Length: 325
Image (cartoon, rainbow, N blue to C red):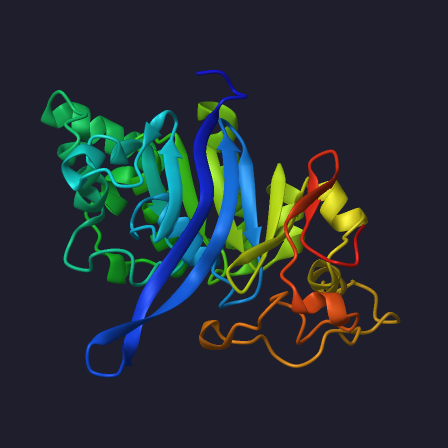
């Protein structure tokens, strides 16, 4: 497959959760992601940026069909997996993997590191022999710098630090040689030195194997460093999308501007800026009508009572805001 061809295509995706009941017989639903479209091409890193509760993780899991779509379509290359049965999905799942945020809960504490990594190899029958399996696992442990591999292979998760556990989670995903990985806040719970190593592993997977990555983060500065495309999310909607240089140097949506203003500047004379946005983010149970950001936007006006569409401004830069004409 050529580098320019899409590994993942999402069209007008909506994802809902059941949340309580209305009356005796009617289930109440919360729409965590609404009408989102995106494409991730081979070898690209696409980031989802936004505060907690913006729908980033839900969208990431939705692209992997770990959540059933309410509306819209999901394509893995040319396969429409929107309503595909689990029995058919299973043969494709080797190529579509996730690195979860929490290295403490994402690994089975009863398994040794060897068996955690071997599980996918065995499920997809990738090894020709026990020796071949061991070689694959030891090689991957060396790649993520858990050496000597024979010592780490027999450890259990509780014997490892948070950074070491996250390396195991990365090894578990990369050993299958996936085409696409959802990296869900993979460095948010790690110290600064370990973060750099984890990001390096992800960048090398893209460089060496052409792996496509959906990188979920609340850190727009990190996203600008590693991404080919940044999508800014707010209350389940993408409000701005574009190349990192456009998002960082010419942010157009007021929410994107606030995220960039919140990035600390390493200069004590500059101090900490007060964000221009008002209050806290609304909840998914109380999404504003019209523009999802209008309750916090310092520039809100009458037109914001109508929902703006995500439209192209120039090049690959898109924004959903009535201020931009």
